[in-house]
Image 1 (cartoon, rainbow, N blue to C red):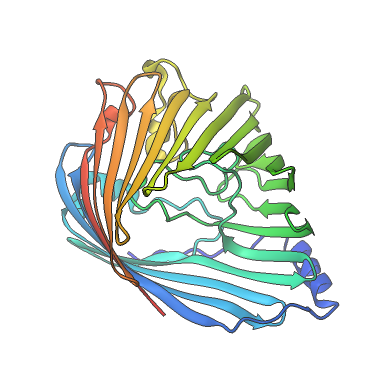
Image 2 (cartoon, rainbow, N blue to C red):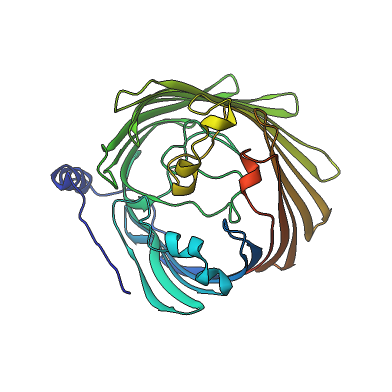
Length: 387
């Protein structure tokens, strides 16, 4: 059944006023011609649903991108996806419960165009943003990726575009519909102001970020309200010898007056000369539970929460077997209940425009533990980039 819901941005008078300010003086930036590019990707997955039904799923995605300048000082980032899903997964109760779930975005710019047995087709705007530039100030309007924080597995500050540490497609980030105003204060410093209307009945997101660099240390401060949480936080990143170190900390207070809590992350990265790269992170989630009896599994299934426990550790290891073949591993440990997950992949660059990936995910834990509820999976991904 075809469904489509388009809504305009609230506060449009403010946005229009900002656009008029940017139009007062001619932009001085050089233009970059608008270019068309994209990719074709096919993902084959074998796993089991929550009901223990074995299934196969084949996801095929065509992504067409248009990026460049429409005129001096006006840049476009438009990315359109057309997806076709095939396989027995479409017949499971799990898929039936997920397929009509609204995405956490204000503007509903997606629709399904075929649903028949083992075939499901849908399309959407993955990115749709215009950037207006005047001098050292940028105003970006539309669906975009707002990357705050430094975490590879977890990020207390990346609330608008969070990532799951075990996502099958880690590079895919759901965009946020927002207005982002950034002013460059120097070569390595800037101040950013974001406004994102609510995608549900909650409150709008409004936050200020300052980012700077001094004596080899990058630091950011964040203050505002994001996804219904009043937040005060910071991150830092630097080098100690050849080791990269980074950390984030945030205090979050729910807008509905529930008790506030803290989150923090500490990480380190090191690249060996032989092609081995290691990253490790420790994560504390004050909103979680130390006791599995208090886990919010329903919130996890609905996407309302991303982590159930309080203490986690993550390890990333990649090794270049040859310049064209890489072995990539993610290991996540729930330190409260001792369950863990491993995501291991071989990535082969068949040619400069084509990547072939073979991967397995394995989940281990006693009954009732966080990762015991997930199912082992095998996947093959083939992606071809074109211009």
